[in-house]
Length: 183
Length: 183
Length: 183
Image 1 (cartoon, one colour):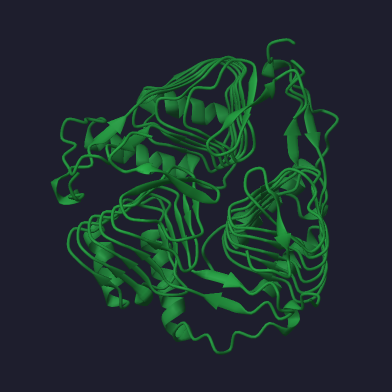
Image 2 (cartoon, rainbow over the protein chains, first blue to last red; image 1 turned 120 degrees about the vertical axis):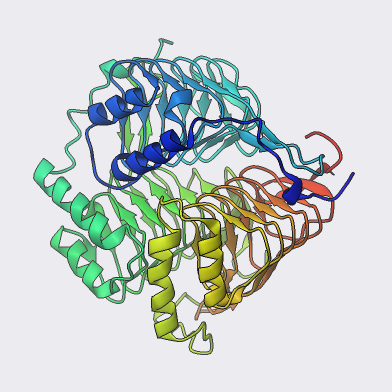
């Protein structure tokens, strides 16, 4: 075990896209996504596609949404992304059909190896399968798969995979009941 | 149990006010409430009243606050609403006198019936009685009543009613001690 | 036990700096820190120093950061402050070398005496020692010292001191394992 040395951090092998593309996206994100202006979801879907996102039909995308890299985002049909959602996709995020990500939620792909002095960057994909509901103010951590129709309850933190058709709650989130029952 | 079908979602029976009123409010909210500019609380109270909120005396309202529908908001006297608070009042929110809602808290009235394929919208009111303190980064869920002088501690999530003069903590929040004792 | 009387609240003995200084800082904070524009960290470090912050070398400061009072902030060398971090330093916050504060975290120095009718303001300093990692969406409460190389996991809430080289999780956060092991 050695002391952390952030001055020795080296992520030169992580290439998230050209600087120009990232700056241009930051600008468009600031103008069309991150503020309160209710730009139409279709306009925003088009912008995301231009920057490399794969987007199906019927995406609804509320204001004040932050998406790190559209070119690492795949969304199928009839997905809702709520107000103030933050998709911090340093790695690929894949969102199935009929998924709802409620307001204030965070999908987080980045981690650090805290056992190394160099605090190496670790990025892992997130996969939300069909019919998943990520509740308001939830956090989904790096590498997590939320299986088909799993539910993460209000304000919970998923650090491990969620099983299909199951409702999770807490920090860290644990299975509470099948989706067929009331909490 | 059937797969979620967000394309079949129908909230046509939910009428939150005319489109014109909502757009106008979104504009004023963006200009006077949701940014960092320290507009005087009295100006903001006046704007809220014009849009139908019932506001008592002495409201203090910090910058970066989001209020969904002023016409579904009742606030009595000497209430504090902290920086970056989010009042997502799809249903009525009623706030008693001498209530403090600290920075970053979320009051959330919206839910979905996740046992129905159509993911029906469910909205339920929130009631914060006199003397309640909602701590920083807390979440209060749909239908919750926080009884007189209850306290929700830092970062906690209230999914059920809080009893009077009692301190709650955790996700989901549970009763920890009477308000008369230190945590 | 008496009812809360926010109208009797009196923090006249709390002097956080002149009104002019605070307004000027609010303006610069709004223009250079709290929005999405990726201003260089060096520019922001310089602005913080002009307003009285003690900043070492190599500070990296992402966009959308809120810092309450630069004149109550001390940061040593090679520190990272992530996107959307909120440093609500009503009291002194001291950050050691090689500390990482990840995106969306909140450092909170303010509290209230909820056993007094007058709801007195209590401010207490926060101390993050060398090599500490505060995970994304975490909250560190008033008076907390995070000892050398302690780790606060994703979305956790620290209400008490963290011991050195130990990983904490939950709300309230509890010790889970030494930093040398995987969670």
